Image 1 (spheres, rainbow, N blue to C red):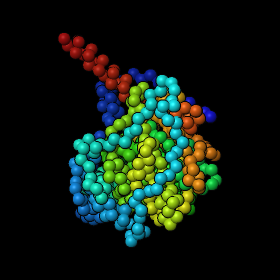
Image 2 (spheres, rainbow, N blue to C red):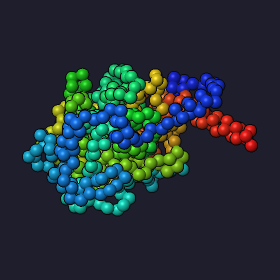
Image 3 (tube, one colour):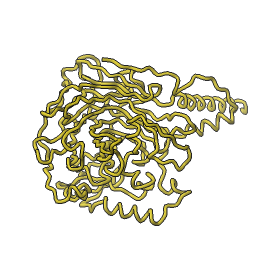
Image 4 (cartoon, rainbow, N blue to C red):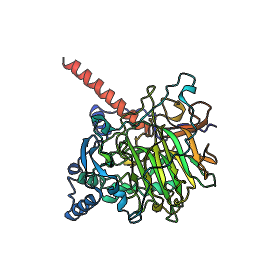
Length: 471
């Protein structure tokens, strides 16, 4: 099946613009500024954090940063090796005095075509499990789990503890097609950012116990400070308008405000009340239980795909442990071997406690709409779906687990594309290694990118002519 919306001119323009040299120079500098990761001191140079704010942050850090058996300097910052039974998850009121089985039983592997069965000249994707902190070879001792230490600067950069922990609430508003508007000043509220999606949804009408897919890994450009680009799987139940929307979310994201860099990070997320007061990213609040000693949620992914070059992907599985009928926790496994990274205790949830109603796969971006213009934040590889394999980003081998813990092809699928002029999606089914898959993504505001590149060339050419004349 194919579904493709062609790019039109809403996100771009072919208008010819002639500008004086000084204006060209100004625009080239202004528009060409990439997202820079500023320190907390720089970001707050015009608005000093109050003593009460700093006191609240220090209290939060004392709670979330647990005593370390060993600490490691890494590209992600300092990683603390924490006793697995003393990690932040067990501070949650619902998880105290609970016993957990920290090893998940085997589950049926999703249906995937073996590499040796693939025919043709495809560049077979490789797994992207290598993380930034793996480079120095140091690992956490047995019985501990690696956790990225949170700093005062991390929280200040996000603007508040709430912003640091949680996704913008308008993630849910956007899912309901509720539009919000924001001002373009420096004091924008990150929770007011509009979101745009290109996703495939499956809502079969029967209980869902798991989901899987191979997610192509890229490093898209984020156009403005405070924006983000995400590729992820959603597992959901409940309704936003009733306040009982529960979600589990896993994938990769580029989010400079959250991670202090523009690299691609593995992430997890959860909420049990429609993004209002529960849940958080990674291990930034009690909830997700880390069990693996090497794979860290929130860490940099070293290996990203290149256009017409080597492709990298992460096979993601989120599934319910039905072997333990008492807890029935939701587990996260990554890679072709199904490496168990951790789990979300079922007791965290209400509508998602027993099963899910819906799953989604796809891309998401946020847009500050500075000066009324659409962002140049990219989704996926920054290429449109029609460019296909090794150019457009993809999700492949989509599977949904039923109440018998058996993976099946997705049914009752729908496609959502919020802005086909900037990002699109093409859902297909083939008999090769891609299986049920889709290509998706786009460059955002092509006109802004076109202007930046051409003004730079024009300015360079003008300088060359000036130098020649002076000689």
